[in-house]
Every structure is written in C-alpha cells, then in structure tokens.
Image (cartoon, rainbow, N blue to C red; front, side):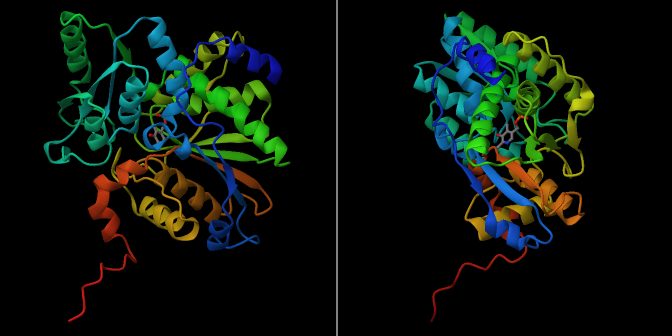
Length: 358
Ligand SMILES: *Cc1c(COP(=O)(O)O)cnc(C)c1O
C-alpha cells in the first residue's frame, strides 16, 4: 500500500525546496522535566522546523507541490495572504525567489503590529510586495474582513502590469499543498520503522488545517500506528474541520485514492486558543520556556507553543500513559519570537539582562 502511495506521489509535479528528511529526535530532558518515565510518555520530536527554506517550517513541504503547480500554470508572481507575522507568507516569498518568481503578500495587521520585525522583516528582504489590511474584527481569527477585496485588487493590478499571478490560499492549505504532508507521513513512517518505534499519538498545531488534512489522510492511507491530535491555535471550528475534511478528500483524489474521511476522524483540542490567533497564553509561554531550557529548542508563540501546551496539559492530566510514545510535529515559526519580545521577557523566571558593575 505504501509503495503504491509512493508511486502516486512521484507522479505529481514537485520542486525541491526543503532539506529532507528532517530529523526525528527523542526529547529526554523534556520527559524528565514533565515527571520522568513514571509519569510522562516518551516524546519524539519531528523537526519540521528544520526544513531549511528561509529558516524552515511546515510550509516548505506544502510549497514543494504548490510551487510546481504554479510553474506549470506559467505564473510569474506568487500571491498569498496571512497575518502580519505569517510564516507561510515568509516561506512563500522565499520559495518564489528560489524559482525566479515575484511575491505579493496581503497581510492582516493592526496599526501597532506593523514593525518591520520577525517574519515581516524577512518578507522585505525577499523583496515581496506587502499590502496591509486592518485587523480581524473577530480576534479569534487570523485574517481581517477586507482580505478578499484586497486580494482581488492586488490580482487585478498585477494582471494590468502584464504579470500572471498565482494565488495561494491562506497557509497553502489546498489539496495540492496537503499532499506535502502525505509525503511527510511516508518520511516519518520510514524513520519510525528504522528506529523500531510505534507511537500512539501525533500532536500538531492547527491553523488553516492543510497540515492536519495531509497528516490524517497520510495516516489512513498507510495504516500508521498513531492517531493525529490537532491543537487549534485560533477559532473557526467546526467550519475549519469541515475544510480539513474537504482538503483531505480532494488530496486523496489527486493521489488516485477513493478514501473519503469524515469529521469524526479529526480530533481538534480547542482548549489552547486563549484570546485568539497570535495571542499567546500562559501555557504557551511556559511550553516555549520548557523546550528552550530543557532541550535548547525554540518553539514559537503562535503555533508550536500552543500545540506543546496542549501536549503538556494532556500529560499532566494523565490522559497519556507513561508507557506510550508520542510524536510532536515541530512545525517551525521561530522567526515570530522576535515580534513577541515583550511578552516573552515578561514571562515568569526570565533573568534580567545584567547591568555592568560599578
Ligand atoms: C502554518 C503553521 C502551522 C499550521 O499549519 P496549517 O496547515 O495552517 O494548519 C503550524 N505551525 C507553524 C509554525 C505554522 O507556520
């Protein structure tokens, strides 16, 4: 079954953008910090923060298939949308440059969020055109109400200039993009097999849902040993789970599979959203500190901090047996840390920067 799937994947156009395979590592010191072998499962980190594309992250796997599709469509500019600190926008801008295309970004930002820092700084370095729209009226969501209108305007302007825009929906969460995480599933399974590991769960942050769509589809197509546990970082359910099902089923069709998933196959923890997209929580800040201080690994304040907070909460609640093994998919996002410096330094236990003596 997995060889058929590998062949179906090989038939889809793909551009090499990521450094693969990414490492799979056990987080032993994190396990000790969470109570050790008596209380905490083994935790394997799948390091998709190390995909390499413009400081890495999960979008590299999606973009390998999406950018190939754009090149087939003879596009000259990649256009996408997101929050002002969108990792997807940053990686899309970089991917565009790698294949000689332009990049145009529609970013949602409150006036006080427009500092040229973190991902936005990198967007500028890649020479992306940035068009701001106002913050979402609903703080639970990632993007503002004017997104569709601005996108239409940007597209029309590009066409008037003789460009051929290729619009990538938010987060690259399309059936073509989700195929990247079906492929990522095969990579993970081959690493698990080589290490003789049979994890029971896989934890992942959920935003626009293309990643989880690919992961759940991949798990079903391969008979993976684990169940995927999504952790929502923003509002929008149950509509977003409906989107994930649709994306997964269309991705299955692209791979020649008649498999059809239903919402019941998607578990999405809603307990870590806090005040909404991009608003960090106490659990998120604690998780960032835990990984930094015990493993020397950087999580991010928007996605992976909340996803790890969800895993930590499940471990503390005793919902996962200490004899189990879980995979945490590290989806990247560290460039966003720099846009949250104030919250991060205000978090408990941060030593002050030393003052020179005398
Ligand atoms: C985009 C993103 C996610 C979520 O992926 P989706 O496919 O949008 O659900 C998780 N982590 C990071 C760091 C991201 O940039």
